[in-house]
Image 1: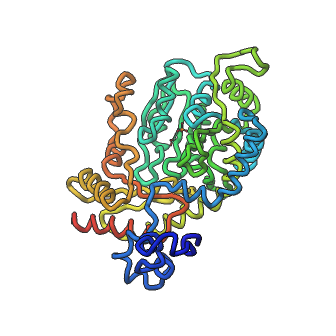
Image 2 (image 1 turned 90 degrees about the horizontal axis):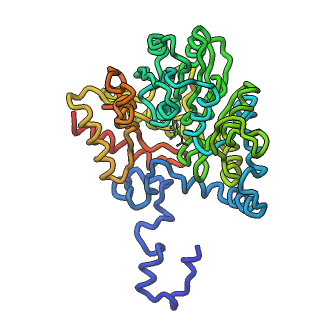
Length: 432
Ligand SMILES: Cc1ncc(COP(=O)(O)O)c(C=O)c1O
């Protein structure tokens, strides 16, 4: 508003036209994204009035809670309890309540959470850990870091999550743990996985980095939050996550008292009493500033998930029935929280080329899109020494050539969704 009342004498006539949008046509007061005439003008005006599209719009999300967040951060600065301040314990209690789990151990990031979880289970070098190959590298990297043996198995092509049948087939006498990853925000079939684990006496470490807030519904109708089902649950608070902080952060969850004690010690140099180190641990803490931010954002998580689902519904409708597009599947036992909205393209001879072309076409129209992940774990050089090259994971390779994730966050607006979907359809039409 300030700009509208600047005296003319101060800025001069040319300046008036340059700086005052009041004199621009069409004026944003009358033609904005809520204007009834917008569909008519849309093509010509889109670039002018639409907010730039981000894969994840952290700035807009921050602006909506700025006052509360700024005050909470100032409180931390005022207290100067930068490490282990009150918000860290408060957040742990809030998360335990939210997930319905007995213990929450905050830590420095999601990768540490997985590493600390595996350290606490006393796994020995050479023990086998079953994981999907179709996941973010952290899930499998920590297995190798601890000199355990990653055993890569297939995912279900519809849910993108680890296939329980593939787990069964991969079990050997050396298998000690399973790491289901709730990929893109879709829940793994935890009932089946926990059954397999019980039959074979295996630990289950849930990688919940992409699905915090989602529920698993058992066949008897009871529900549990992901991260609270396995022996240990792990999550990441990386800024772009559904519950993200303003830096790095993570947390570990368990219902087991003894394990909780051990996880806490490992995250704190193996000590319970200061300077008395009972086991080899590491240094993995969540900063007080991050905990203060997360406490505020946790209260909003339900609202954030609803916004993601609304955007997903829009995408689903726009792409419904398209013969080359499969929209994300929503299994009845999972309530998808859409960390990512990932399409699977099919029916082209050169499908990877078309998919990569779509990625470039969208970029040319200032629409970001991502390929999660361009190289599956078993094909990474990192795992050559772990026999990665010996695997034949056809579904994983099939998906790797076909998936593409579209912008997904809590602040997506209808004009942005309309623009994104129209450009996806426009490009694919040109390829038919
Ligand atoms: C599935 C999965 N596991 C683990 C991690 C690791 O989390 P962080 O980046 O906080 O270490 C991520 C985060 O990107 C992830 O997506």
